[in-house]
Image (cartoon, rainbow, N blue to C red; front, side, top):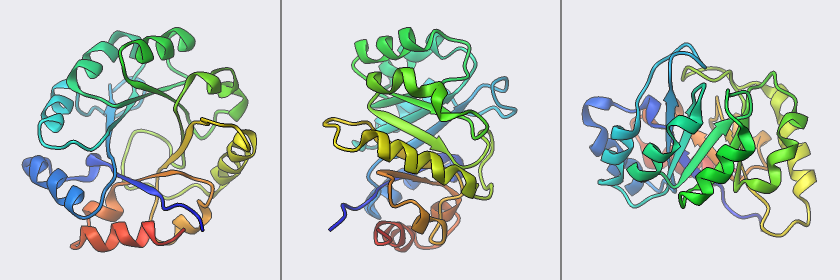
Length: 217
C-alpha cells in the first residue's frame, strides 16, 4: 500500500489578515507542513514576504516550515530564514548564487536544503546537486503567482526523478507545487509532498480538501 502524501498548504493563498488563525486551521485539518513562498520582485515579477513572517509563523506552529526562495541571490538571506525558524530552504538552480556553496551553507545552518527549477529548465541542470539536498521541488506552474493552471508537461520530470532515485536509500523527497487539486493529484503518484494553495485556502472546508488530496494515492 502506497504511503500517503504529505500536504503543505501554501500560505500565499491564505487570508493574511488572520494568518495565525489560518495556520492553526490547516494544521487542525491535517496539514503536514506549511509552505512559504518568498519572492523578491526580481527573480519573479511578484513581491511577497520575508524572514519576519517566517518567524511569526514559527511562533504559532510546530509543523515543518517549507520555505521556497524565489529570489535572485538566496545566499544573502539564508541565515535570516534559518534564524527565523525555517525547516527546509529551497533555492532555484537559476538563481545568481554559487548553488553548491549555498546548499552546503543551508545544511551548515541546521536547515534541510532543497533545489528547484522553473518549468522551462531541463532536469539535467539540477543533476549535480541531487546528492546535496533533502528535497527536490518540481514546479508545475511558472513561479511567481498563485492560482495558475497545472502544466501536465512537467509530470515527466517527476517520473524521471523517481526513476533516478529508485533503490537509493535516503533519497530526497519529491515535492510538487502549482495547480494541485483533486483532479491533477491523480497524475502525481511519484510525489512525496504536495503543495496546494488555492485548492485548500479558497474552500470552505480545509479538512475535506486535505483529505481529498491525501486519499488520492
